[in-house]
Length: 116
Length: 111
Image (tube, rainbow over all chains, first blue to last red; front, side):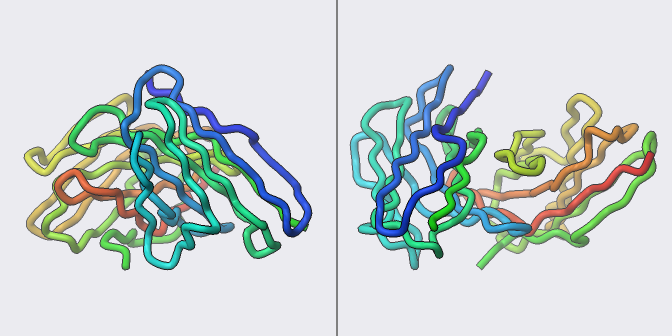
């Protein structure tokens, strides 16, 4: 199998607070994990690529100081939305690459963030 | 920008009929293609993938066809069921790089 979990599944927070989202590969090791953001009725937008033991690679236009990514082990990556504001409200989805040579990504169930 | 796009944003199909979802890509360097299904409020679910050295690959009730000449990818679903109603995304990857997603096709199955 290739199961990826995310926690929490949804979160509501006040403006200015920080929120941490966890992504875990449950039955395989993932050297590379990815973080996406999805707005309603839109496609997935890659935010960053997270590599175990090294710094994340951010896509153009994504603030690395705003969206902190840590990939401390082969089964866990975290995304922290710092000083969240209402415009950060979105559906955040992680994925983990199984195997080598950049093959299929398996996605988590997503985390819905609402910033009040 | 996106290197992958879908021909139609929506598709309505009668239950029991076959569905065909199309996708065009522009990156000649793409050598890996994948289809995902996303139900409302959930993460994308892997359906089937294909490498550029193949033209066709079959799974359970699904078939992916790749035409490299015209840079076209399609997903065929046999005997469409109500549970197939979802948004379907194609994605491509050049030489093992990151995936680039298309806009998605919303499939609605009519009873």
